[in-house]
Image 1 (tube, rainbow, N blue to C red):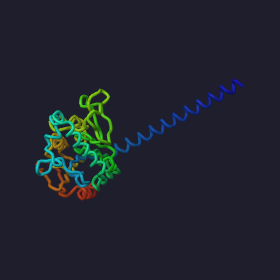
Image 2: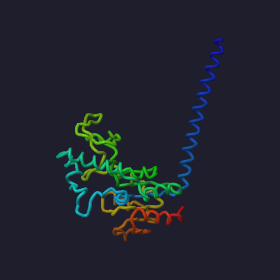
Image 3: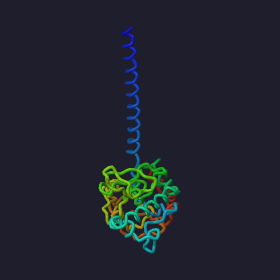
Image 4: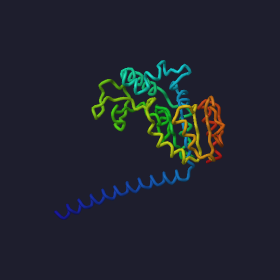
Length: 268
């Protein structure tokens, strides 16, 4: 009787081990298929700016009068503003978060995501919203932070998600006040160091909805290999005569991305 119990226990453990190995094997095959697929696709790198989200109803970071939603940039989007009036800064970004949650991805976001069928697509965005992700893009790098995240004001590595308001007195795990996970004016842009090698490795480089005046993000175009195809989509194309192999599409993002999709068919 005891031998039978031992045998049954051995068989159960053997079955569990077999099941675990099978799952691991399937996972390895899935990852291999993904990387093999990407290796055979051209790497398409897209730099996006406020123009793509504007068509989802999100105001651009700076209007023609130099204001952002009626506020001076210096009063709500700098470290000095945070030190001077953190309540005002929190109120400002709490409202921006609500605006983002109410917005929906538009045809440009969805169109760029659809390119993943034929290309290894990397989105590098200056925008702090999550519309690329909700539009279906799976590889998104946010240069200037994310409105749906918050972090310790002392330790930028202590980051967590947030969909509600951040309040004065809300503390991170290190005891410091929580602040929006946003790169403010006058702060460094650490993700630019991640973005540069991505751009350098691009087979095709695309700019959508940005005037190429916000640095260091605007400087990324200079890291793209000179001989590769480049496209820029914006309702008002900036000065670009120094950029080689450039196709300009002077349209809003939603219609311009559809033109881009058609133009990219020859590169698949």
